Image 1 (cartoon, rainbow, N blue to C red):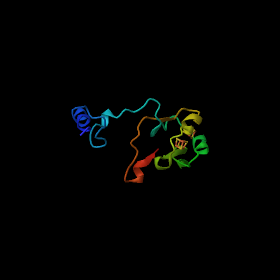
Image 2 (image 1 turned 120 degrees about the vertical axis):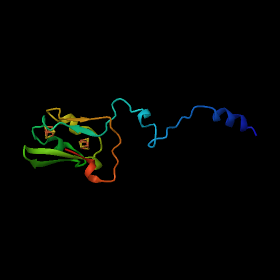
Image 3 (image 1 turned 30 degrees about the vertical axis):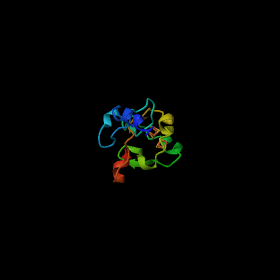
Image 4 (image 1 turned 90 degrees about the horizontal axis):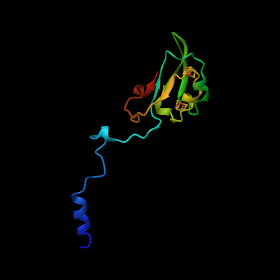
Length: 112
Ligand code: SF4
Ligand code: SF4
């Protein structure tokens, strides 16, 4: 019985939880400085390979394409440590605040 006043007090309060991921996506508070999915600017890249060399998880791999050697980032292996961003001499890599990186298809988890 002692619980009832407490229950009624909370019934009319604004709820503290969000209906994420089905609703309220835009209300998710993404903290400043969150290290999420990287964006990669191919035009700036010179193919030095430092990102791949310093990547601790093997998520950044250097591959040959029409422009020479360029990295590919496999998000499903990424630790979001930002080492690649730090070592890139051309500032071609930026870790964004995008945190929704789950998927059903591995090909969607590649940044190139
Ligand atoms: S953030 Fe870290 S783990 Fe992810 S690709 Fe860059 S260096 Fe590798
Ligand atoms: S470190 Fe930067 S410039 Fe070097 S290969 Fe990686 S993305 Fe390109």
